[in-house]
Image (cartoon, rainbow, N blue to C red):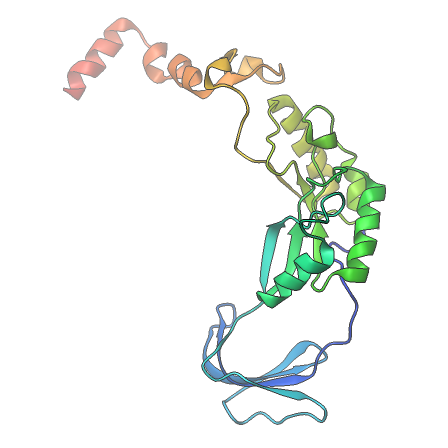
Length: 248
C-alpha cells in the first residue's frame, strides 16, 4: 500500500478561540466577521462575533481587524535538502511556510543528489516527520539525475509516498521520453509536471509533427506541421483560387 502523500511533525492540535476575525471561505460562502473555535487543531465551530464560549484551557486570540482564510498550499518549493542546506533545509523552509499561512508544501527534486530513488525519498520523509513544521510532500524526478535520458522507478517512488513527478526547471526534451513518462505515471498514479522551457534551438526541428513520425524521437516543428497539413495545401490550385476570390 502506498504511503501517505504528506508528512510532518506529529504534535497535539491547539485549542483556541479566534475572536472577531473577518472569515473568508469561498467553499462554504462565508464572508464576514465571526468567532472561530478550534479544538485539537480542527475547526469546531464558527459563531457570531462575541458569542463563542471559550473551552477550558483554550487560548483566546484577538482577531479584530484581521482576516482568516483557509490554509494555503504551495505546490512548488525548494527545501534544498540534501546537498544545499546552507541555503535552506526542511525545518527552516517549513517554519517560514507556517509563518506565511501555508498549511502544506510540496518540495522539488533538484537536490544533491537528485531525488530520483525510493531510498532517498524514504530518508527525506523520515526527516520531514522529525523536522517539518507543516506537512510536506515530495515530487521526485521524472528522469534519473534530471538528465532526460532514463526514467526513474515511478512505481517504487509512489509506494514510498511520492506526490508526483517533475524534472523541475529542466524540460524533458525528448517527446518519446515524455510520452513514456506520462504512460508510466498514469499506471502508478500521482501527477506529472514538465516545464515548457527548452534547451533546443528553434531551428533544430528535423521534421513536422505528422502522425507518421510519432515515436521516432525526432524533434518536430509546429510551424512546419501547420504549413504541411493546413487545408489550403490539401486542395487543388483551382479550389485555392476560388477560396481567395470568395475571401476578397
